[in-house]
Every structure is written in structure tokens, then in C-alpha cells.
Image (cartoon, rainbow, N blue to C red; front, side):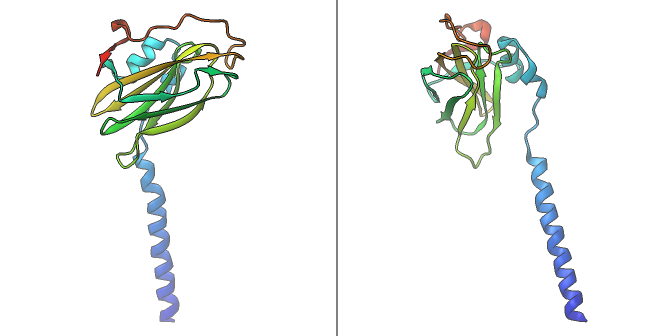
Length: 173
């Protein structure tokens, strides 16, 4: 009888430990403002995403994406950073209807690298903004699309310059 009781107590304890192990990680998920993904204005969404902080163009943030994408509905993008203490990586496409296309919370134990496939409607600057040590850094790359993803075929567009002071993106670091 004692063997059965000990086994039941052990299984109950194990079940409780597993349940706590499954529930506790939920508290570690980063909180984000879902409305940012429905904001249509690039300047506003960058400003809101960065708490109105200055964003510095940095060679320590690298975007790896095709210069010419045959199909804008699925463009492979990789962002990596050599900055220390990266907290967040965000991806924007300046000509999409909704410019914020992805936002990743980065664990302190994780390498600051993300890969994603994004939809780009027409020729677009893909912008990566990285939050590290409470500051924001960026890089951008023009992706030319031959078959549209978000809005049909792409006509050659003049790239939008996002390194102006009005976009809160300033000089290289």
C-alpha cells in the first residue's frame, strides 16, 4: 500500500512540476503593442516602435536579402547584429500597406540573428531596427521586386531615404 501511495505522490509531484514548467515560460513572453502591425505610416510605426528614440544607422546591423526578388510574396531576409545585449529586432518594408512586417524579442542567451520570409509588394527598402542596451540601431537594403507580393507588379520606384532626421534615423555608428 505504501508503494502505491508513494508512487501516486511522486506522480502528482512530477505532474505539478511539469505543469509549472509549462506555465512559467508564458510569463517570459515579451509584451508588444499589436496595433503597431496595423499602423500604415512608416514614420509613425518606427516612432512608436522605438518609443520616439533616435535610431542610429550602424554597420553593426546587417541585412542579408536579395537585391532583386523574383516574387515579392516570399522574400527571404536575414538580420544579424554584432551589438552586445540585443533585446529586439524589428523588420519594416517602407512600401507595404503595413510597414512593420516582423518583431522579435531576443533572449540574452540567444544569438542576435533572425531569419524570416516577408511579403514585399513592390520595390522597397527593407529596414531592420535593433534595440541593444536600450538604444536603437538600423540598417536598410533596397529589394527590387519583379512580381508583386502585396499589391501587384512593381514599377521602378525611387527608394525612400530613411536616414533623414525626420525619420529619427541619424549618422553611422
